[in-house]
Amino acid sequence: MYVVYANADMSSHMCTDGGRQHKRDGAPFAPPRDSICLGEDIMARRRVNPLRERITAKAPLENKMVKSAGRVLEILEYFDDLQRHSTVMEIADSLGYPQSSTSALLRSLVGMGYLNYDPHARTYITSSRVALLGNWVNSQFFAEGTIISMMKELNEKTGDTVVLAMRNGLHVQYIHVIQATSPARLHMTLGTVRPLAASGAGYAVLSTMTDAEVTRLVMRINAETEEGQPLVKIRELLDQLTAIRKKGYAFTCDMVTRGGGIIAAPLPRMGGQPLMVIGVGGVSEVMRAREEEISTALIEQIESRFGRQMRNVVSMRDDIRDPLPLAIMQARMRMS
Image (cartoon, rainbow, N blue to C red; front, top):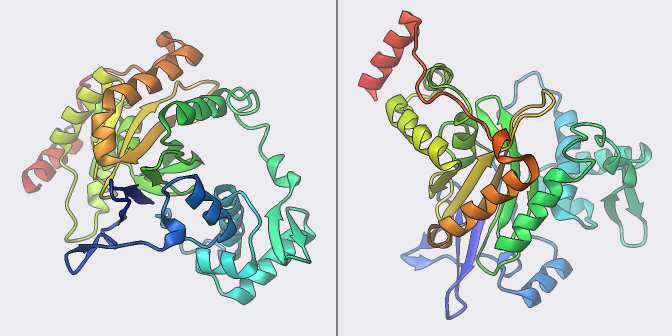
């Protein structure tokens, strides 16, 4: 994920995850020209010169995962984010794969009908077969266009990046992204994961759970936290979730990405499907100034499609009756 925005003098600044690119020797760090989003002329150059940095956080994977299987799916997600033809070299550089194994994977996908190859331009692109792969899943949302149309309308109305996210273990993961169109915008990569207990989208997920469920989950997160890393303060988190439930949305800035913010709200659960979250992301200073505007647009979109009565409602404070988790929670709170 990266944030690119322009000042009045058209100078640019970039902020990325982990603070890897912010300032150099006290001066703003200028990103490559092809990653600066300053208007339609720049967007045209980005299409001509396709190379750009892809900054993303991947979900933690088990050691027993087959590497080639993961790479195949990442290639398909890469094309979903890029939405145009791409060369072997560009794919290998963007995903950090060896060129030889990338070529072998691409040839295999062409042979199976999931990619098309242009021998003259030496480029690849996904085939129609990919589009048909999961169209039966969540048909009431996707095949009929309820969620996708809602995301497109939010994108058009706000000009900001709109994401669809769902829980993946102790994280939330972006499963669909519509990139921003405004000059000051936040780029969020498909497949990116964020901490469940330390992100706006994660807070939106947790707000649909009872306090007892959140407490047990945070105890697990703290137990798995690496030494030296801060623990999640359960009481502070529960207070934040109480406020989120009252407002109907979560709003965080500079929490995971410096210079980036997100306003997120949960979608109603229907047909036994997993909980999903819609989020609107942008530059922190812009999001703070437009919080009321964007949050109103987000809630109105959800209520107009699903009805106000379908909003997720949970009890504000469930009793924790199991004395052992309660004792552990209190000990963790004292430590943090």
